[in-house]
Length: 496
Image (tube, rainbow, N blue to C red; front, side, top):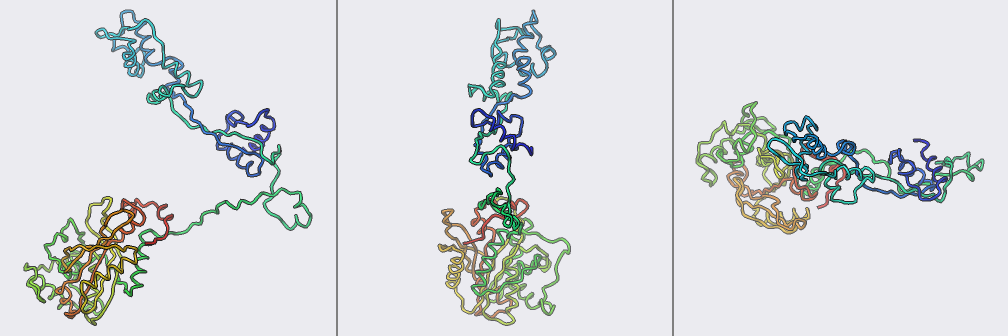
């Protein structure tokens, strides 16, 4: 098709009337090739063109057969007429073919062309007009039908298909010529020296053309929101906790947090347990490797008998249950470990973590078996619930959430506990955005922390604010194998 632009110019020159229709001048050439040639000529201002789109009806293979030999119902009628005593129903398929017998018999009955007489078919009218064949002949000739209802019926019967046809209305441009002149793309030193630049034709610059997209990496929306959270925490003086232990013992994940061993959260339907190895060692000091015997005994006693002013749960605490290995169900297990280390040198501290946790959840539009938890703890002397409320307002205001409500809740390891709700203007309703509370004394004092030191704790998922920010309704489109890479690459940086 390299000479197609020349053909177009020659056709325009020879045309007695303009505009020139591409469907008439170049009926056998692919419209895409015609458009490519027209774009090239239009960029030189040699032609102007207008795109025309129309729908045409085309006959299917079955319809072509009907135009040639008659409709199925007409074939059935003719076969019945040729049988003087009527045609046996069982022999119809042998006479007209299986397809015509199946389709045409019902249509012929419906039109009243044939009727049943025992096991035979007899004609019901003296003559017929093959309407279907006539309709298809019109469609074949005109590429449409004057009656839209008829065309719709033919489409339902799969006798015609509608296709989109593209053609072009072509006119001469301001720089029309019958020959293509090579356009220079660069002004060279030789042209300037010789003066050839005065007679050369230069290709105009297109300053609106977009450059080629650069191949580059892109942060996942979750990571963008995670970065925002980390910046808020660092701005408020927090220290990030190490979260590289996905597997924890039941002791750190549950028992240290005053979660009883009969709690539903520890059931198989809620927690992923590790089968190999079957259990962990007793807890050890991360720095010295020594067993934390005193802490182990304190947790045991708090659960079984009660201690530090607590009555405990009064059940036989099972060591094997405490040593079962689990995929951590929350990052609060890390917080417990950090607070135990803080007991060596008690004082004010602020810790946070953002990492993956695992729950044996049924996967649906709002739940996954793994997700990210954002967690923070503040330790200091004489903290009160009012301090926690004030901090929550400051923390969430930095995320752009200014209207908060707090609802009493229950957590095994915090008392009092509160659910946090924020008003989402986009959704027009209050949504739960986190959980919080003050760690129980029997949990903290078992670690060796002094009585006056109190700890605030709160947490929320990373996925929920990200879904709200990016208007994602199905969490599986945000995390997992269904994530659209285009969604990752094109979304803007997060701004709460």
